[in-house]
Image 1 (cartoon, rainbow, N blue to C red):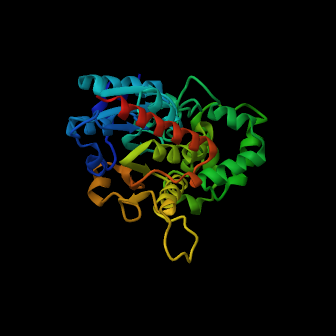
Image 2 (cartoon, rainbow, N blue to C red):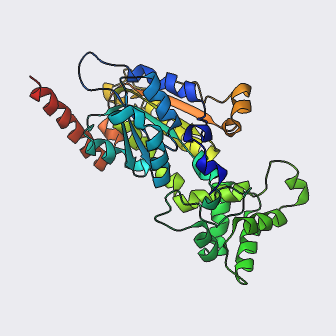
Image 3 (cartoon, helix red, strand yellow):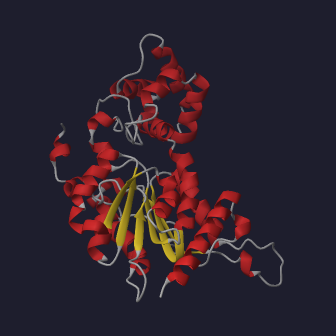
Length: 356
């Protein structure tokens, strides 16, 4: 067991832009004169740092914590146990947010959604998970170790063309082709098993002059493999629109990204909601084409020097936030989403009519 495994969870996890996230969510999570308590869905619970801040600072709020990593749910559950039934852990992938909130009785929408993307402190600190290129470990990289292919499976079974695609598209690696060829050539002698072996191969593939800057030369390869193993970008493409649809009017979404591929997806989804869908040139903008989101940040919020010094993992963060102003127009929803929207509308009406 690593030293990190026996440290208190709160000491192991320093949430990025901690107070900024809470301050952006707080207006939507204030108590109301009537109705149930406001609800935040923390889609990437990790070790519960952001969730703890919300529960402590906003005493009327409830938090639903989603994570695909059972170990994270266990540790966060211990950390947040003092909040009792104000916290509900859920083992799921965060693109399932719509099903999760409906199953828990919030089909009419929640007041907040938080996403802190990428690999968590827990996964980086646990050497045997294989996420960190600085520590030798089995080539696993699964966020949920109970299911799916490992990084070793990818390295040992993908052909050179697919490996090149993964390294180029997900790691933005300039030397993707050369690294892929070397991976295939090396596995002809023995299968890939350990992270240190991969780090050594990548270092050998990258020219010495290039290795002088940019940190560990293996970081882009490790990022690419992690994204491929966990299907991160495909999940995120589904998750951000699903999270927006899970918001009630007046609800807020806050998303922290750590690399350009993630941030591009988030930026596109928010821009779609903050931009009129009316054809250009109309003298009057139809109600059904008005923006359904309001941006809460100008561009992306970044960490300042003090935050980076306190928490080096915040150096690459890009935070975007938005508020739901009205339901998404049906012409912008797919058939399945439209059916869910109508179901939620019916549920809201039914609950209203049932009140004495």
